Image (cartoon, rainbow, N blue to C red; front, side, top):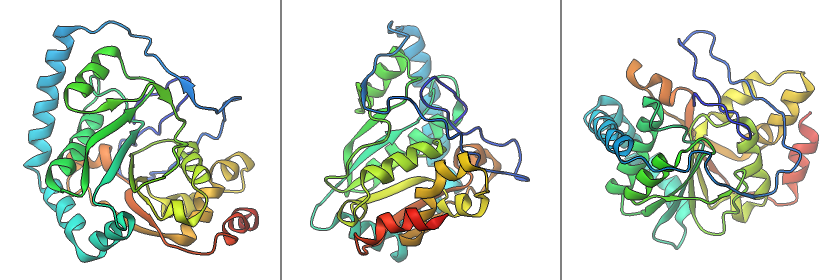
Length: 271
């Protein structure tokens, strides 16, 4: 995402395909407990909201009629990926959707494309829940009001991505910072919870390939790299340059069942 804000730093998309690196910024907050949140922009502007609706309508139409979306659906419907979703669902009928780090949907097209994909999934598949919980500290009151008009729920607490997966959950986190993926994994670092998670976000394979001997980078990514051992990953094909900024280096991630006692060992032994 293109936005940086006090609590979350979101990865900047590269301008081209060459030399792309996922560069985690490992600085942690002194207090990473969940905090009540309120936008700095407290006024809902009806004119801005109307313009945002027009922008979102354009983005939705563009995505829905694209070759990228056709390929995206084909991947989701393939036996390999659909079987993974069935495992996450277990005996439940729907996945809850939680979207972190969406960024400013008013200011940038890429966040609108990402939101469009989540909404289209909700419309396409009956196993996707009919509500999307959304959080990003950059969201304005106008953006929050618009999201609610789409049937989304804007969270009032900054969970720092530490949501425990007590039921099957799709975490939609394209281009979030490495610390947020690490927080999510840490909060669910037991196989009965990891097995309830489908994660859409930065490729864990890319993190594994790019990890360095920099102590701060290692600290930010070691749980991600450790989780790679029990992760089944399916890369997203951007198909055209129109969708590169929004979805490059993104993947679906699913976590296989294993032995709980091994999970802490994965982290401690990795480096």
